Length: 265
Image (cartoon, rainbow, N blue to C red; front, side, top):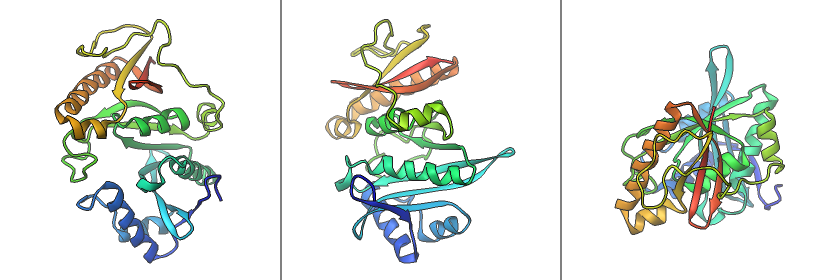
């Protein structure tokens, strides 16, 4: 049992796979049309995929799904879905599921994992970069097209592709909590998108900050036009700096939101 009082285990039978579909709709919306169906979860589990849940008693409060394939001669795992019941957020469920996933994959000799996430979701950015130790050099415009999920509606489905090197010192130290957080006001690091200004796409410092809002969903509910401005501005910045050899390597929090640390590679 985890410190949060829940248990993580593979989903056992078809009834639990159906419950996983119900949880997907609860998280991403009743009309979400990209739900992973029970049949896909079933065969993925049969061929060694990760199909697991977090359970608080009998209630499923988290879901993890991914499959392993090949990148040339090496195995690579694509972590397709991580979801946490809205009532269970803040309990460490997401981190516990990813820790469980890492342990299982290392047991089978898989050391590279990739997935996508919305770079404007600050909670996910913090988990991915600060707690798990991912990096990113790839930005995808509208990776999944128009989505029916209310979480995605209105600002498109732009995504970062992240790289999680399971056996690296970077990942190990971050997951063990050994790396102190970077501060948003580190001296001498310029900001790509200062408040009220268009993004500065030609900065030439070794490290630069890229700001994102504290809660893109709340902002979208209040002012969808402002949320779209964040999307277009950060899209331009990620594409410009990745194109010039920078890498997203960390996330910091400040009172007004969060920010990515982009480092020239």
